[in-house]
Length: 562
Image 1 (cartoon, helix red, strand yellow):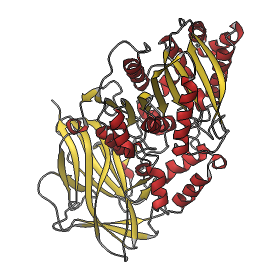
Image 2: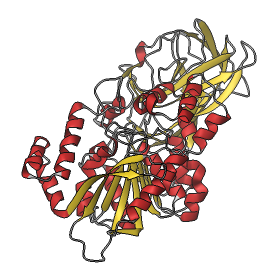
Image 3: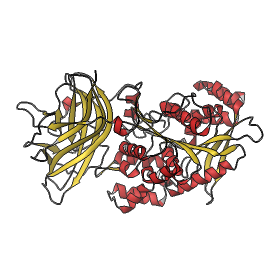
Image 4: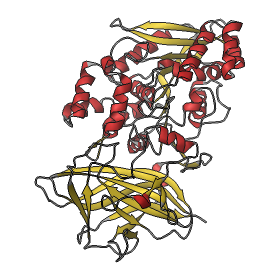
């Protein structure tokens, strides 16, 4: 999904993205020397001249049963023999002002591979009529009508239909496949598994991402149902209506349908995904019983497939071509068989390619690091393996300002910089220890791999009834006090009375990270992050403690490397 340089619009296509999409559309609809020659500005003239020789392209309106028209585009291979049919890939749009045009860069490769392609913008999005339904039952019904329209064409084989989508299109594709058995394969990049888990984690709303999504949907384009949900989430009214709205839009809750049809499903996500829940995608993958593949990469939402959507190389789109070729019989890929199971990159090596059959074999066993008190004369506490450490208490102030520790300074863009080899540097040595509690290991004696699930336990005593804490695990350079983030999690608790001690146990986001010899693991817990809602009142204080029998710890899946 293209991103703009302005922090207020992390998903927005740039002016050049829009100009390129317009130029490609003109070259496809009018493959004249003038239109194709205009593509030289981006070095694409030869690509679309070749496309015009092997496929036809037309922009269409698909009229649904309720009269709503969807904006769509159809690409069909030329020179099919009489009676010959071809496989087809349907592409619901990502959440972008480009709509279906976000996929224009993939058309030449798919056309050369013998595929018909029908890309469309879901109702309410880009050039389509209607109101945004957020991949709800109406969007799923629309997808079935889109398939009906497609298979009515004499060139398309109704037995070889696949769906590909990125982001919003990924969710639409997965939910459509749960409803329509004519879909024989799905590839879903930057997918979601559970919409509720993406909005609400450990009692904490993901407000920053939610508001950016609403901004991109444009509230005036949203259905009345969705508008009601927006107001409830903003008002922290997380009731049965909100949960049901999310449930029907969550592929994880449709596992029975997938496992009955045995639909082959390819999923991709990112370790520092800030929009959708990574654990929910892993749970969806684990619950699937048919052919399946999961790719987890460095970066944030939509970063990894972005080059592939524009026609360049990316692992998600290359895997998609192989996936569709294997199940639909085209030739868009490199001729190799798809890889099943889990593939991942570890942070921050884009060339790494770790493979396992399932999450159980992928995740390393956890090692428990007990949280201790700060030694005399030192401002940071220790965390180490060995005996539990009961009996300490540490207090932090709740203030209106945040600390240096944040999930990501910028949605999407921080992850994109991470993929480009520029992970954000946190000056953890400069964090005010009065507003954050910090625990650090001794420097690592050997290069160490972290891979899998993490869990923390700590006892929290707020001065008020409610409190929000945010935990961050960092890779810290002991000599400079600079760090990179490994993973994080928020937790919000609501007590019956002020000053009540509550022991909380919560999972952090899974991770795959390699720490060099001499680095330190550093756990930071503070009380505010702009990414999340919070229940704290300032000024006040929160105490962290480790009572006997409920000692504080963090479980980290680690193994040393030779």
